[in-house]
Length: 286
Picture 1 (cartoon, rainbow, N blue to C red):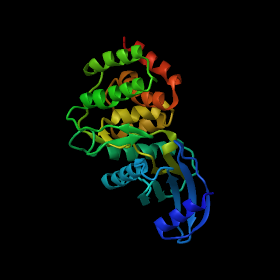
Picture 2 (cartoon, helix red, strand yellow):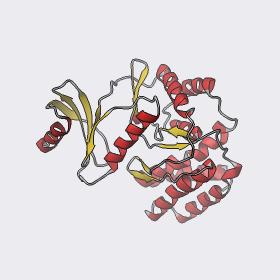
Picture 3 (cartoon, one colour):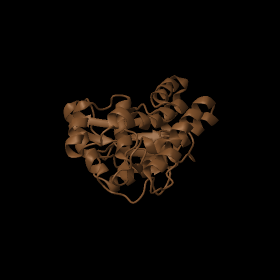
Picture 4 (spheres, helix red, strand yellow):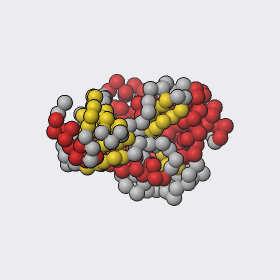
């Protein structure tokens, strides 16, 4: 392991590294799990570019989520110069039915906190990708412009999304008022709830990591949890006991909302994610 990185970690946290192991983190970053002489355990992400602010923005989102909600997130020990050092959260448990019920309680509490506008006070990230958060009083308008069409146009610019498919997405975007509904209020969202960002132990959620923070309709958050089967019936039964969903979510709106993370995956991983977009557009007549 790069001794220079170990020395940077020690200087940042003011404690010697007594043990360390590789931590898979993706997107070209270096990841470590470290044990410190002061007894703390930490997860470390390091960029090859010290001026890269993505890790700084991730730290800001974690701190913001921790300050604005009761959602369990890791404490940020240090952030700066392409280095992020966070509390190591206890892990090792499966996302079973009890974990899903606990997740539902936490997310209902998160989603029930009213905010003034959709979007946020600053732009954020989803994975390594820019996520614009220009604030808006209308959820449908925000989703159209700053989620669906923004990500579609970026994918097209990168030659990942064919022009014909972009045109069909535009036609759906023009018709969103006939498909989506406005929520009672803007809700704070984690924004990237797939299994890799959820940590569980002893039948409880111990933490959520890697947020893609903004305020939106809780339905887009819930839809994303179905994309890779992160949560199932146990979660939705528990969630709806506390906060019932409007009719039509599972049958219709869920599929439209999942176009956004699918476009994210088109940009990150290529054309294998184009066919789900085509299927959804066909289902809605576009």
